[in-house]
Picture 1 (tube, rainbow, N blue to C red):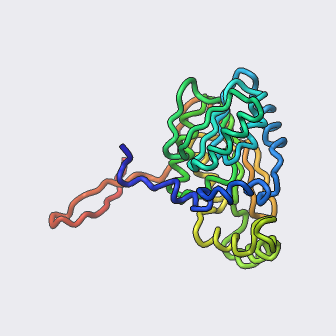
Picture 2: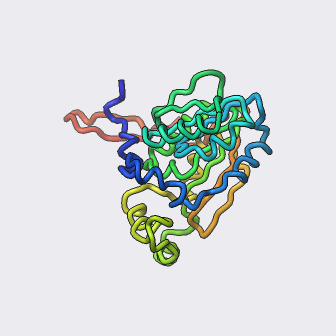
Picture 3: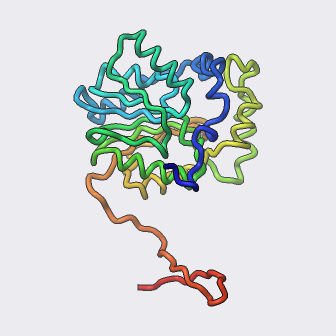
Length: 261
């Protein structure tokens, strides 16, 4: 049973991902991204024909379909039933039989079988607020084998808060004018208002806390980030602020007191 405090990942993904018309034009609007570089990175980190790859936020399945011939098993996870339906059709049309489609999200996907060897996710983690990003990254680490690789692409901000006006203004100025041909100025503005892209200096400690070593980082226009991370070979001690203990002051008001060892 879902916990009452869990968020609805399908709602956070946005209503457009339930629109068959939007989904049909999704790859075109995205500019038909080429996943060859991402697949090459995964292969360089040892992904092979005996491995399991989990694609979180698989969308229309471009990475899943490209990776399928290279691995034993691809698990294509997406919260949108419309995306999943399109992905299943594409896999059937391509004669690909080793892609498993699972309708779930970062917080609800339950991995089965041996631990995954690699996880890929592109432009999906930003749909979660930062608290839930940290939970999601911890869940990803737990489904990966030690030494497994995470390839993460997303809208991640590589600038200081005081630079936001200039950098984001330039981003909006470079937007498409036709919504059928790409993301428009209003699309970008809506993303900033209602989605949860974060700063790299907030995301990177989350990756470290989840037990990942950041191997490479690449940024484009201070907006788009790509990370290659490897899960630690064994659990390690993570440095965090001291926990606090909750106490009652006797009149049903709760306070906080720092614990010292």
